[in-house]
Image 1: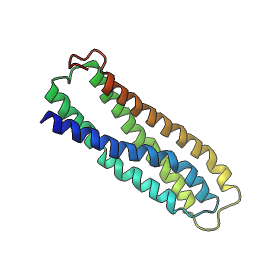
Image 2: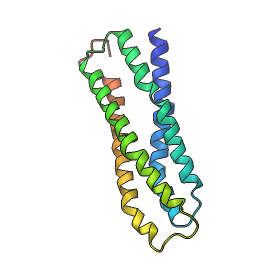
Image 3: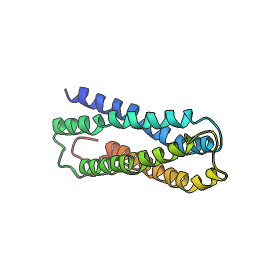
Length: 157
């Protein structure tokens, strides 16, 4: 059972979190292009990918906790740190990244006649969104390292 739980945990992490990191990283540039006059469909698609996979990504900690329970490591510091970082990444995604994307997307979908300088005005928001996405990606990179290295673990890593 442990191998099945771990397999699902890793697969969902790769598919869901991987998709979010790529789509969220591409979004600010595409949103700025759309505000500058290009079609907003690419930015809208990237936002839908982030939203959809964010919901699917809930399975990552669920299966991670189930796997940790099977292995008897729920009290280990590396797992607690990983869960805290996962919660921070989820909060960042739900409270800052997705709303930031919605704001830029609203500007991009505002219609064909964009006010003069709208792209320039949106640049600070896009830069902030790029920074937040980088932090989100970094949090997940640290979680991956913790899952592999497992400092202090007695599970034989």
